[in-house]
Image (cartoon, rainbow, N blue to C red; front, side, top):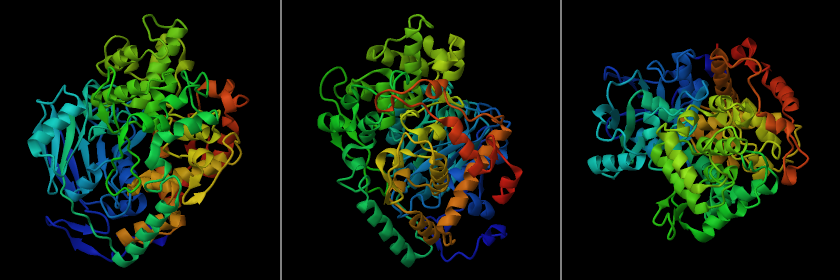
Length: 626
């Protein structure tokens, strides 16, 4: 990759002037707004060309900005920065390219975190003339940022401070009009600095994990409002792009899980995984005391489709349409309509809490979205409270599956009231305060998502080595262990086999490091081969990249994150799992299985070239990080 040593980008084949006067070169507007919330000053900077080559955009470039800001900052201090980033493919004609990412230092884990959301705000931010926004310092009073025509203005948010996400979005749409408008907002949980508060986009698409909303709240940043009329940037090489785009569409059409109209994601959404995970003993239940849920079908995608599903809305440029719009027509939640009944949320507030009331789950998801709080972390917090209550560790706690009490405790967490105040600090410190740290199903302070490592070994090593704490989206081995489609090819591996899972995971981690930097939807990786991703990037930007170089770029992003975490205090021995997964056998199809983490870690570190979780100087040099 000789061009890595150049002082500027290689010759760009296409430079164009967009409407509004902004100059774009190969997928980038080349304009990032650095916003000082304490002074109101806004500095518009171009993107360093070497950084663009090394880290691409989106996740990678956001991590570079956070890294350069220093790993020693306190997450909720004014010194931390909050990056809202797009990638070079965001808002283009590339399929599934409507994503945006929030990157910051997490108040929940103390690691660097990146959390993505779908919808239209990413595309509109690009169309509005910016590649990203970087917020620094803190405002003295509630503030929101308004973006239009390549400029940012800071406005008084006093009228919406204290309001929920839904009311905040309505206020902004009443003020600026609904057309071409996106709003990313925090709710009361972010204002109260709940350590797993999130930023919610367009009512229900959340940058959910890691406490991004708490960082915004610490800066008194209520929301980002974007007015972005459709202004799709052209690719650098139109003729070659058309060929790459045609291949991309064909792979999406031909892949069973992504095929528009008939694919699993279109028909039943992400919640199609509920029964699949349960069948192989990989569905954590009752705070992961078991790994299967006898009533999983009651909350699965098929039941949702047959009972409360009313629509299949989609994000920008997405033919898959995995979002499921539901309407409840009877009972105590009658009239609730939303489009965010996703697998992870349905599991966290369902089986993890021994709850099979799908309508109550929908209502709880909507409440979490309105309060601006991570549904995964919240569900795990409720489940941990239920186990603690069962064990007599807390008084006046929470019974398994008590939906009314669950709704009440969600509010108490968001407003830091009563029992919720302790949970709002995160599950690790709360479990220690209650006297049993083993009941917290967390890694690096962040709760597990909806896959049990005893029934899915790849997720065990995935949780342990994730740079942002327990996470399925750093390296989605269930694509091979459950779904059976990876990068346009059918692939099935034994979920109970630990051998080879480290190598499989590293491929996913490196691929996602690149795809998240583009920034396009991960569901595309079920269908789209690496060579086609490389062609899409090359034809849009005008910078040639092949599949091997794509993987190397993703590896660079992953190692930069790990290096940041090492410097922030996550040193040797920081890749682990809750003891339950290592010592207590699963149930159902995983009844004879524990997670073989130590064996997988040995293989993983050897391939990565790390020393017990720490990036070596030779690896940093090889990847041109130092």
